[in-house]
Structures are given as structure tokens and as C-alpha cells.
Image 1 (cartoon, rainbow, N blue to C red):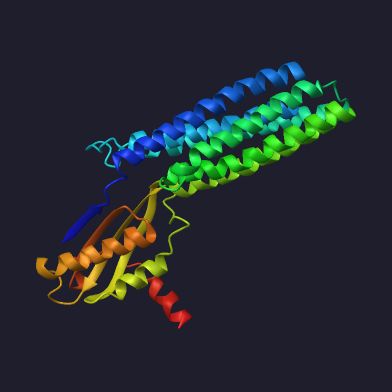
Image 2 (cartoon, helix red, strand yellow):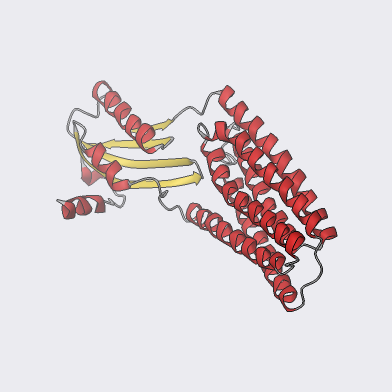
Length: 316
């Protein structure tokens, strides 16, 4: 007997609040990104241009999170049984490759400038960098409330914390160039921001690969999950366990449950399944759950996947 279960999404009010926060932050970030490109060009500042590239990563992250709130509301169809959740994963892959290209261009230009440092307008660089710092702080403040209720917004918030450090670095470089004539600070900070872009891109790309490979989400301890389910009354063992991410923040679980005779009846099965749903959702944040109850293991032809029993045995 298969029992599908999907927890209802956040309330419409919460989703709407997250959407408004994301849109406001996106407007700020895109606006400053354009200002950074223009300011970096006229100031001759590689640091500003690199920072604008980093802001592009923020803008894409915000766009992906905004798209996730929209796609989550779209129902699945016979052609796309998971809806459009994976479009965000594909967009993240394209974004990661684009940012790699930006980082390589920054490193190449920094190498050229370290050999012959051009003149940089430190005052303009400092002004644009200070505006960027204010924009970053404002965007973080806007997203802070929604991040506590929405996993997508929380991920964007963590990503933008790195960009805040980039804004501070640009301001410091602007002071060094303007007040002390240390133009070499500009390409040096550009390299540091390029490294930060690579680091954030690596995390992004790693997450995309894990989703596409169907790997178990990092925050889910499958052994602990199986152990808790097997501790329930009437459960003999859990096997053929599969846990994966449809997209970041949308995790799924399927499993076969060998139960004692009598627990396959509706009267005893429903309370058991309700308890399993509570464990999966409340303790592991898994929203898509399918459990198949069985009374005889011999009728199950799938791979049993019971290595969690071996791990439990090793710990005892």
C-alpha cells in the first residue's frame, strides 16, 4: 500500500512577504551592479568592476529564489510530475559557469595591472564603494525577516554576506588609493574579490551537482531518520530508502516499511504513517514522502538498502 504525502507549502501571506523582500533586494542589487560597472569604468577601477561581477551573482541568486517561490506555486502535470522546480538548478549551473568566466577575466586584468598599474580615481572609487556598502547592508536588512521563514531566502542571505565583505574591501581600497596614492590596492582587491567569486561559485556548483546526482541532502542524516522510524511500534525494518532533493529546499523520501502483521490495515496503518510524516517533516524538513507498507520481505524485489543497520550495529 503506497501512501504519498506532501506537506502543504507556507501560507500565502508568508510567500507573498518573501516575494516582496526578494523583489526589493533585487532592485537594490541590480541598481548598484549597474552603478558599479559605470563607476568602475570611469574610475578605472578593477575592484569596482569585480565587485559588480560579484553583485551579478547576488542578483542571479535573488532571481533564482524569486523564481523558486513562483515555481513552487505551479502545480505539477503528467508531463512534469515535479513541476518546474529543476529550472532553478539549471539556471544556477549557467550562473556558475558565467561567474567562472568573470573570475578568469578579473585575474587576467589584475595580472596586467600589477605589471603596469594604471591611474585610478580613488575619490570616485571610494564614493561608489561606500554606496555599495550601504546597498548591501540595506538588502541584508530587507531579507533578514523573510530568511527566518523561507529556506530559499536564507540561502540568498548567506550568499550576500560574502558580498558585504567585498564592499568593505572596495571601500578600504578606495581610501588607500585616494588618501595615500596606493593604486596597487585596486588590482589586489580585485584579485581578492575574484577569489571570493570562485569560492561562492564552487559552493553553488557543488550544490547543483549534488542535486543532479540525486545525492542525499547534507542536512539529512539518513541513518538517524531510519533509526527513528524503526523505533516506532509495529515497524520491523525500513529498506529501499531513497532521499534526494528535487531542488534546494524541496527534499523527497521514498521507502519500503516492513511491518508486523495487522499494521497494514487502515485502522493501524494511518496512525503509523502520520507519525512517520511528523518525523520526516518536523525533524528532517522533508516535504515529499512516499511510504510503502509490507508484511513480507520476500514480495519486495527492489534493492533493500539496509546499510543503516550495519552502521547502527558498528556504533553499539
